[in-house]
Length: 91
Image 1: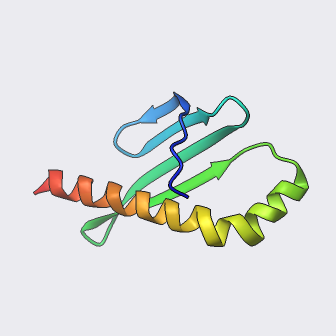
Image 2: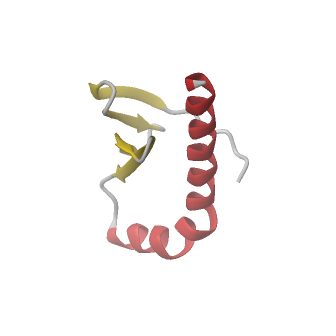
């Protein structure tokens, strides 16, 4: 919610130009982020998976409350910014 969060990021896999995986850790929790890129009707389709080991109650809270209200809008905004940046470099 507008709060700056610093993470340590470590690339764990890179298969350019189709796949990028990295871990991001804020010191308390580590998340694995996986991005897969593939051609799609003259454009590029991006698939993103995020995984982490969490308490089952936190998973439920994230899916029902935090995801729809906070995380998803933030991730969609970030992915939109990535899309705009990548597309501007292609022209």
